[in-house]
Amino acid sequence: MSATRGLSELMPNTNTKSNQKINAIVIFASAIAALAGLLAGFDTGIISGALEFIAKSFHLTTIGKETIVSMVLVGGVIGALLNGMLADTLGRKRMVVLAAILYLFGSIGSALSPDANTLGLSRFILGLAIGAASASAPLYIAEISSAKIRGSLVTLFQLAITIGILAAYFVDSAFTSSGNWRLMLGSSVIPALILLIGMFGLPYSPRWLIQKGRDKEAKDILVKIYDGDENEAQKGLEEIEEVISIESGGSFADLYKYPVSAALIIAVGLFIIQQFVGINTVIYYAPIIFKDAGMESAKAAIWATVSVGVVNVLATFIAIWLIDKIGRKPLMYAGLIGMVLALTALGIAFMAETDASSSKIGTITVIAVWIYIACFAFSFGPIPWLMMTEIFPLSVRGRAVSIATMTSWGCNLIVSFTFLTLLQAIGPSYTFWLYALVGVLGFIFVWKLVPETKGRTLEEIEETLQKKGH
Image (cartoon, rainbow, N blue to C red; front, side, top):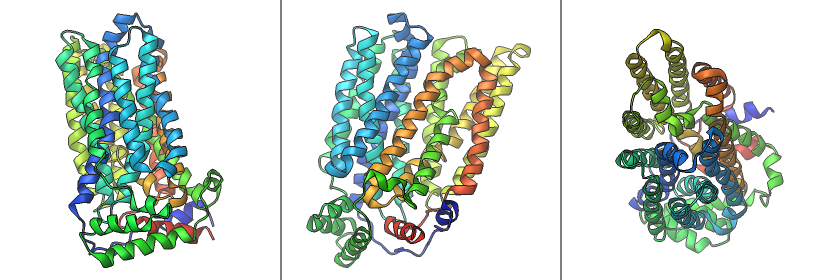
């Protein structure tokens, strides 16, 4: 049986545990854990406004600017790898706490950096934190959630990313006049402290506790999750234990055995599409894109970038609203179509720049970027983070999620490090059209390989995968 056929048969079961009670503790814990996304978003947004001021202070070339941006991404790859080695031992909660501490140190180091090398090292530490948090936080949320609202709750992680980006844009705009990039970067300590304080009172993942043989603690947490319903908690406990009993020990070698290997292809593929469709080039370099499109002042470009952040946040609510109603695949289809059209329009606008006024090109650019960001925000923004937590067996979930997260940061690194070089080599039009081509290929990938997981518990998905593998 092919990997495609095996996983495509994971169709949603809308009747599964539809009567489960959901305690407010699940919502609260998910919201706090999702703040890990705020770390990634805040750094992504803050560097876009600070980059040109940093370049002037340290006399950076194009390669130097790309290096400063990319050090976080290098750290993200390694942070995700370390998470894979430690998450199943220390637990998802402890990894998020550790990430918040690292982010705090990285933020302080960035603000106080006396030279470009120290800044690069500090941003590498930030990357370690973000890489670990972006692997553990969505996993933690998925493992304390029920099937009927898991999509919406994990999407809170992406919402936090967009809020972090928007908050950073406002910070950037506040300091643009003075050019004080140190205060821009130093403000990152605020989201780190919020996450660190918030995580201490949260419960451990009951699935992780059961995997570690701590059944009584897991049962107590499940009782809270199911609003004091002992029967539902016991059913949940037995279901998790049953799945664990048929698993192997869960080594890295298991990642390459069917059906886990098929799930890994899907998760990795989704993150490749997520990054190579060009999202972080727009986020990191939005002010540069708008200035190249004819916006005369740095402040005008910054405020146009703020508008992008607003669209990003608002459109993410579309995913929260619809992801557990219409499913994952319809949102991905709609998002990819919209992104391809917007990227095509961006390319045409820049191609026509010599024949039109700068203000007209600037308007078209802003509208096209708005459409692109909105379509990404309700589709490939949240859905890869969600699906990577859904399709892997518990025994290898921590390791597999880390590999998927490494893919995201690795591809992010490649795209971000090559964007300015691509602009200089082939121009903005062909650069955006190249990203549009990735969107077309992504549509085919989703159509042929990606399953619909709406409405199924993690254990049901895993049981189906286990059956397909035998």
